[in-house]
Amino acid sequence: MFERTINFVIFRIACPALNNTRTQTSNWHFDTQAVGHNTNVTLTCAAGYWWQPPSLSGHPNTTNTVNCGSDGNWTPAFGDCVPISMNILRELFDIVSCS
Image (cartoon, rainbow, N blue to C red; front, side, top):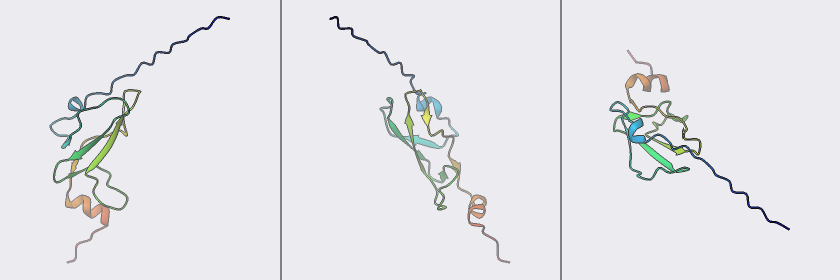
């Protein structure tokens, strides 16, 4: 009886480097150096910025954890941090001015 060995090769596409994804207007940073597949990286907004949309409880999300998948994509998709402004707070909390 003959034994046959079957070898599988799994090709993984590298995720784009976060340093290349980040721009001067992104207003976020990360502290992790290792970004291999299935690695979680926490992105942190600069002071005075948050991720939109904010959490359902109305609290600002200042961090966003993304994962480098074997398909070469960061998930969940992310954009830039945006300035926290009174206009956003008014919309979130339905603030009306008292005159």
